[in-house]
Every structure is written in C-alpha cells, then in structure tokens.
Figure 1 (tube, rainbow, N blue to C red):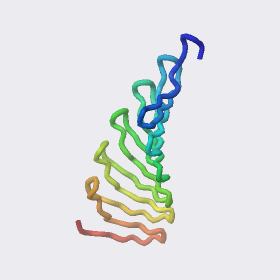
Figure 2 (cartoon, rainbow, N blue to C red):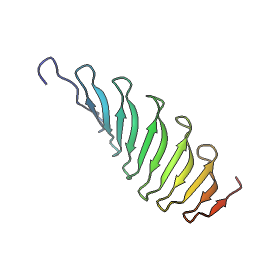
Figure 3 (cartoon, rainbow, N blue to C red):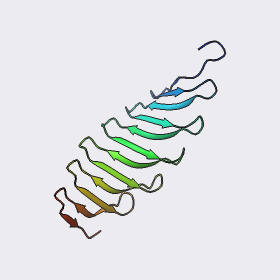
Figure 4 (spheres, rainbow, N blue to C red):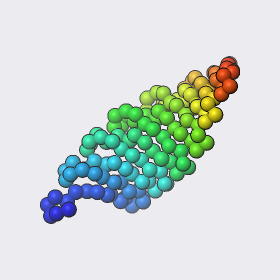
Length: 134
C-alpha cells in the first residue's frame, strides 16, 4: 500500500505456517492459515475476535466449528467417503453423536468423548437396529 497506510496481508512463521489477513491498516483480521502439516484453517470475525469456523485437513476431510474465539468446538466432520460425523459438547470434550453415510443410513451414539458407543442405526431401507452394551 501507500506509505503510511501499509497493512499486514501475510505472516510467515519459521515453522512453515502462513497466516493471511484482510482489512484496513490497524484492523487487519486473520482469515486463513495454511499450516506446515498441510491443514488449512478458515476464520471469521473482527480483529481480535477471529474464530476458526472451518478446517480442511491434509487427508481431505473437512471440519466445521462453532463458538467464540478460544471456545470453538467441533460440530461436524465430512469424510472423503461422503460420511458426515456430527458432534456435541464443549471444546475439548466434543463427542460423536451421529454419523450419516452417503447411502442415507444414520448411526446414533452415546457416551463421552473417546468412549462413544452405537445405540441405534436407521438403515437406508428404513430398517432400525438397536444396540446395547458398553
């Protein structure tokens, strides 16, 4: 930009990650970050309140987040297979509650993060299966 109104547009870290910014001088906000591992994060919000809303992972999956800055929680993860996983819970303790396959079948889960267990499945043909056990 012109002298005196230069604005930050990119920040490159020694780790190899690159952060991208938009906005006028003094109000630049982070909009995207490309991490050294190949993941790409997308942000929304004004300067100082940017929150991650989406992350494209190097494996091709896409995660969606909700919540204010610092409290973003995973709510959905789309896999390359077409399966979409749905999550509930606060940041750090998000637990899988449902998976929806491209075929239309839906599996429901209960339990804490890392200990989720299937409790019901609604198959694409309308049949319903129930599960018990730990």
